[in-house]
Amino acid sequence: MEPLKLNWNCWSMFAQDSPILERPVDLANDAAKLSRLEARLPPLLSVIAGMVDFTGFFTLGHIFTAHVTGNIVLAAAVVIDGGSFHWAQLLAVPVFMLALAVIWMVAKASGRRGSNLAQLLLRVQFLMLATLLIFSVIAKPSADPVGLRAGAAALLAVSAMACQYALLRLAVPGAISTAVMTGNLANAVLSTMDLLAVHNPLLPQDSTPLSHSLHRLLGFLLGCVVAAVAVSAAGDWAWSLPAAVAAVATAVR
Image (cartoon, rainbow, N blue to C red):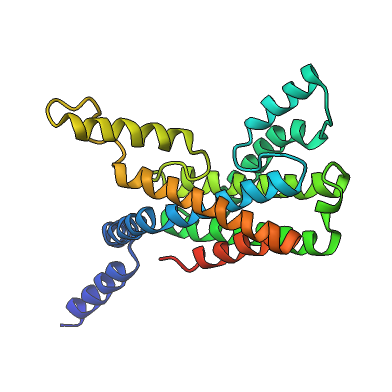
């Protein structure tokens, strides 16, 4: 009976520690967590993006901090028509790219995947926005929108939005963009046309549902409206709102 007992003990140890046996359960649990994140996170992230984009544009010298490629158009318009030039408009895109690369390295070094990686990057986004809030309250960059302090604040906001982009691409790939609304607007219109057509819809069956696009559009719009009120009432303290929503997002499961 001793050999049998020994063999059973060995099998019990193997069953507890084996990644082969645990892997299907882990994958199923992570898939369920990701599914919940895909449903719950994007509306919150869209609100954050709307707040950051409006607050940055209005207080930091007309710089797009979420729609970063729009800064190329703004810089080109200044070159052709003249006007005040903000050096951060030119740096926004390369800083965005650099921030994405750094976030990728952080994700790689963490060894996390799926929902665990999402939680890590949500915390990074919150830390960036909290740092931006502290810097803005102390340095008051809105007092000189084309100055060095405003540029530094804008690039920090751009980096926070880069983290949000990376979060969706690396950890929650089933979710669509929460910071650039052009694709969501296009999908909403095309999905509406398909619904009205009833017969022979043109969009693929696995395309993004209309409700998902509407949630992101409404979230971004809400973020812009709330940020407009906050900027008018609180100035640089308006950055407390996206930081607060980012803190809430870290608790989403």
